Length: 256
Length: 282
Ligand code: SF4
Ligand code: SF4
Ligand code: FES
Ligand code: FES
Image (cartoon, rainbow over all chains, first blue to last red; front, side, top):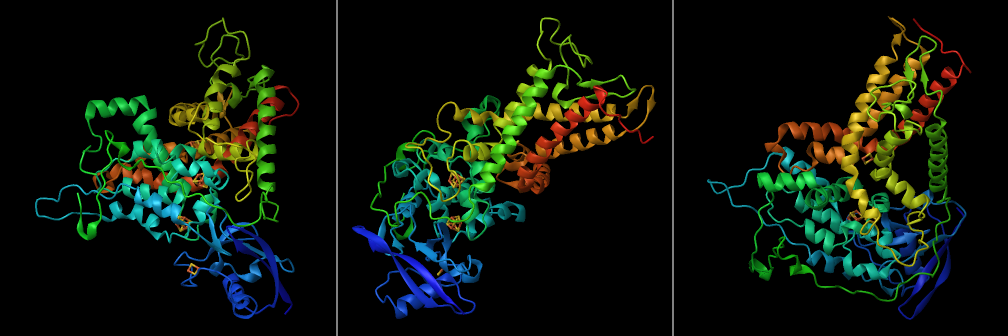
């Protein structure tokens, strides 16, 4: 088999450059295997984050030929043959070194999510959930927090300043999961509009395209959230209905 | 309230959204080269294709809307009314559905009704995606940097108006019913019942309009998506599941119905102007 040409970004916050590696190709490899072989043979100080090599831990996120992907789930033979494989760190987050970025932004945003606040138990001290009540949220819980969706989202990828008021697709998945939970009593819609930037998303679906868990982020989480926000503040009929029937979610002003 | 392990339970309500409003700034130097994109595939192709497709349709629709002629074929024993002119509401209509607008409307009778389907499509979640990418280049493609210095998405006027999409949906349902009626009327051949190639064109048109309208995201929400506890709302759950089958194909239906409504109009134009003869099956 011919040699592979791999162009890796090497550097840190003080600057960086592409370094080109030539390494013999091997059958059946994924990009992470190649990176590991480079680390083992040619660049022992190469920084790369990984854990499971099975597409389940979400650590090995990087950009391969300009597309955010998991290195462990990208087969070398699916990339254009004879062309260099270009690997760069996630663009949206600050670099630590080489392929490793600081993804704290996402965890900070996660901390801000108002948690699950269940309604009171039924008379026999339990909660009852039926299949149809739990089904819908299953998809959202497949998220492996690889943050590829956060990385590709142009709202923060191209506009650093939006990070102050934009939670991003992964977090919208989390919000959708909680908002749709039949037991939960928090109403996060106002927060979503005013502080989490739901309106910044222009539903261009790049997050859905890159999600390795195939979560329908835009169709099943973001758009339903946008529609719920419409109920809350842009739909006069829904607003009137709420005033008359008082069906809206229980508003509590508990401790912080 | 502090739960076990010192985890705080945060309650955000309408009255105190401030609870979790503190800013994060986790900026820092980014890695990678300072280029617009490292993609080498033909990432621009889908956007260019849909941009051209939409532009062609707008050009055709403008021609049709101002044509104000050959939109109804009643002269050949047929009863074909172009979907661009249905319902025809002005007194100057060749075929009057109802003369709601009266005589003061002097322009093409297509114009006052086209506002509704145009608004429906312009605020549709799919078309929004398409024009944001193709025309506004935000983003030009996934992982390709956009050319704008600032970005506010759908948070400000005019784009915040896209939130009224569901109101256009209500009208769209009315239009789907009217176009279905037109398809039924296309079986009318003078005083008898028949079927021509045009009838078939009308049936396909009505079917595609229904598929597009029912696969709409606002429809999905209104039918049942707004419910949290489906076990307590069985009927809405049933509707939601049905709409959820169509919804993933919304983009396909958007294009098919767009193209076909043009085809239907052009067919009526050809028959009404006598350019072609509409073959009758029975
Ligand atoms: S659909 Fe919205 S959240 Fe997803 S990448 Fe596009 S702008 Fe970002
Ligand atoms: S939603 Fe998908 S792309 Fe985003 S972090 Fe979760 S698994 Fe990754
Ligand atoms: S190493 Fe765990 S997802 Fe790639
Ligand atoms: S018509 Fe496209 S989302 Fe409603």
